[in-house]
Length: 436
Ligand code: HSE
Image (cartoon, protein in one colour):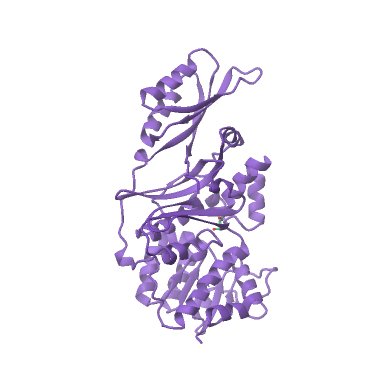
């Protein structure tokens, strides 16, 4: 039985979850991977009151873990991309295997770290980096390895889904729900990453790389956050039979790739529309298996720790038989990844929800529909609210037929130059996933 000594760096939400799993399930962990996995060293700048570290060596300098000759696997759970990048780089250079939950690190510096790990013949695993407790990387990289994947789409930020769900279902304010998500340990240290779409974009980039065999490119996705979604839009969406979810979408379009994260109206009767709260969902469309949907907790201490431990146990199993993890880190060796062009934003087609506030006088609606018609944009449905007492303005909501983004931009620009229009046009994408 292989003996592997583990050092964990970081004792925050995920780190403390990993320690708890080792404290509570040590026997089960060893039995199920048939390896003697021992947590020996914790690097943490401060204690975590909710976490019993009494059985382990604890260093305040997290780099002590990397320098510890006893440690075979370094688990990086400090987050961020500066110290974490140094830590992981030094661990790999010291010939240690690395497990991390750090999506920003993998999305932004994964190409260099993977090349380094391949050269050093050590493993670099990051199941916990995407969708918390859902084993989606393993499914894409291993279970579906015989498939050509055509698309991956899903709710991949738990904080964002928690906020949108609570705003829509309980009428709570954005700030109130965000504060709760932070208290529950769902949100990033800098919650703007959850809100502006950066966190979801990082995860999407990792999924796309494995799904399509392309290098990691953190800047590739079109990115829109949930901060523009108002209670008014959530109510209109409900009235139209939709709910609003923040989605990451990666699709193969011929020889190009469409990558985007944005708030999206989804028909309320679709399975993914019912994935609420901190839950995540990832739909994968592939040629042999068809469509599968994975759902589960996308954030939180123990769910994310479950994925970290699964990586550790996988390494235990693999290193029982060989000194090198034979599985390519992104599914294919990094020198065989092939960059594909991105579908230009203007050419991404889709259905749109538009909300605008206009003067309530004859001819205004005709002007708006006329401008859409001039651009060849067909209207699928339209709601006009009566003016509120004392106001001369009305709110109009339009659902378009499918149109290329560039053409919609031009029509919105025309509409925003109408004197009758107040402010700017709110626009959200609509996706009608087939029933599964
Ligand atoms: N902040 C992330 C989320 C944590 O809410 O999904 C899990 O990656």
